[in-house]
Amino acid sequence: MTSDKSISIDSQRINIRDQHLILLPQKAIFWEERSYLILTDLHLGKAGHFRKAGIPIPRSVHQADLQCLQQLIERHQPTAVLMLGDLFHSEINNEWNDFRLFLQQNAGLNFLLVKGNHDILPENAYQEDNLKVYQEHYCYGPFHFSHHPLEKEEIQSGLYNMAGHVHPGYKVSGRRGQHIKLPSFHFSTYGALLPAFGRFTGCVHIPKEVNDEVYIIVPKQGNESKIMKIK
Image (cartoon, rainbow, N blue to C red; front, side, top):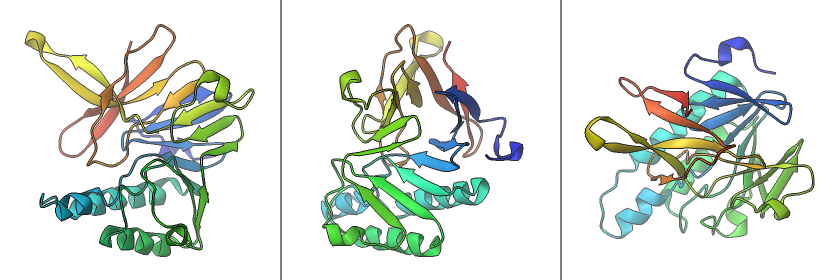
């Protein structure tokens, strides 16, 4: 279990199936009981994919995502990093080499990938010593992890689904009828949607149903953010 110093005032600590999850403003979850850092939809390589099409998206976009992930690893000291798909956006390019170097720099840490629809690299590309790949599902503890959110009847009996893919957000109304969409964690009675970790992604408004719990990521001054619960 993580120490109290890992729970900042900008995070939210919640309980799902008697497990304690820390929702982080960097768009990830720290699962205390297993010391897992959980995130989804990095979409590394997307900038390179756009550059091939003549759109000048800088490589630094993804380097900043990896730097953020490194900071979370150093802060929380997880036993494993679990990625719920769409790690890499497209065909292999130089940004995959950045990730391979990142894995090598964290050689003592296990990385688990539940493959998503964008994870189309050849199987041998994933053959790194500390990267284990699951094709569609990974069940551990009370959770059924997947990339695509599962229908209730698809979830392994008694488990709670945690998924990505959707890039959930929530539309917040401001003054004078203005609206802004903010990335969100979305919890229903049987499953959760995690926000996309990669900054070169968008988000889609997911309506809040009566029994849902929604936590939005609100920007503060500078590059800081905080987690707020929608009431």
